[in-house]
Length: 201
Image 1 (spheres, rainbow, N blue to C red):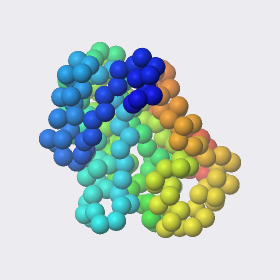
Image 2 (tube, one colour):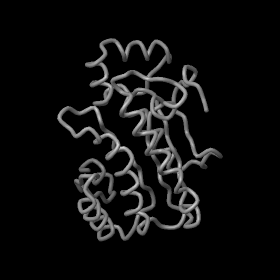
Image 3 (cartoon, helix red, strand yellow):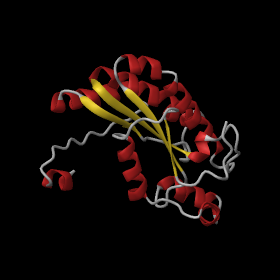
C-alpha cells in the first residue's frame, strides 16, 4: 500500500474474514466510505489445504464465501464494473481431468464456487456488471504450490516439465489485472498458461 501511495494513488487496506458475513460487511462499508463504490472486484481468496480446519472449510471458503462477498459487493459495483474470479486449471477442469488427491477437495470446492458465481452472470449483466473467470496453472511461489510440494514432493517440477512453463506470482497477477479491463471472452473464461493436458467439457 505504501508503494502505491508513493505513486499518488489512494490505497485502503482492510482485513476481513470472508467466511464471516459481519466482517465482509464491515470491509465493504470501509470501501464505500473511502471510495463511494467499486469498479473492479477480484475474488482471489482460496484455501482448504490448511491443517486444523473444519471438514467443510474448503467449500465454505471457496464457494459460500465467494458468493457472499459478491452479493455484499453488488450494491457498490458501478455501471460497467467487472468481477474477476481467480481459479486454477486443476479446479476449472476437475470434472474432466483428475488432479492430485491432496488438492482434490480444494479443486472440487473451487469449481463449485465458479459454478455458483456463473449462475449469477445474467443478474450481473442486468446491472451492467461484467464477469470473467481467470484460470491459471500452478503458480510458483504461492502457499498452495508450497503445500502441494510438501505433500507430494516433485509435483511442481513435474507440472513445470509437462506445461513447459509455470507463471510466477507477478506474471499471473499481470494476467488477472489485464482480465479486469480486456473485452470479456464469449465463455467468460480467460485461460492462462498451457492447458494441453486438461480435457475441456
